[in-house]
Picture 1: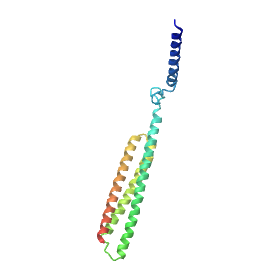
Picture 2: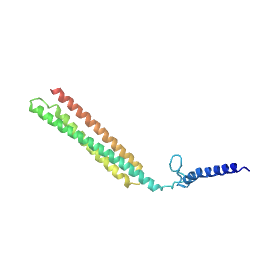
Picture 3: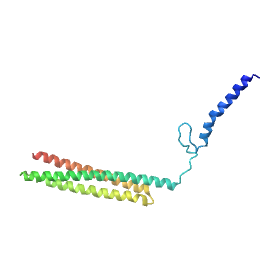
Length: 172
C-alpha cells in the first residue's frame, strides 16, 4: 500500500473523531440539543403536580396584584379629578353662577367612586383567597369576574365625571 494513502486515511479518521467529540459531549448533557441549546423534555425530570400547581397559583396571584395596583392607581387619579371638579364648582358658586344642576351629578359620581372602591376590595379578597382553597381554578374565575366588575365601575365613574365636566363647561 501507498504510505501517502495510509497517512491520509489516518488523518481522515482523526478528523472525524475530533468533530464527533463535541457532539458526544452535548449528548451527555441533560438532554440539551447542540443545535438550539434547549433542553429535551424527554430527559428533563418531571415536576410533581403540586409544584406545577403552586407555580400556577403564584403566577395568578402576582397577576392579580398587578391588576389591583393598576385599578387602585386609576381610582386615585379619578379621586383627584373629583377634588378638582369640586373646587371648580365652589369657584363657580362664588362667582354667582347656578350650580344646583351639578350637585346631583357629583353625588352620583361619588357613589360610583365608592362602588369602584368596594369592587377593588372584593377583587383583592378573591386574589388573596386564591392560594388557600382546594379549587383554585374556580376562585381564579371569580377573581377575574371581580376584576371585570372593577373595570366596569371605573368606566362608569369616568363617564359620570365627563358628564360633570361638560356641564361645567356649559355654565361659562
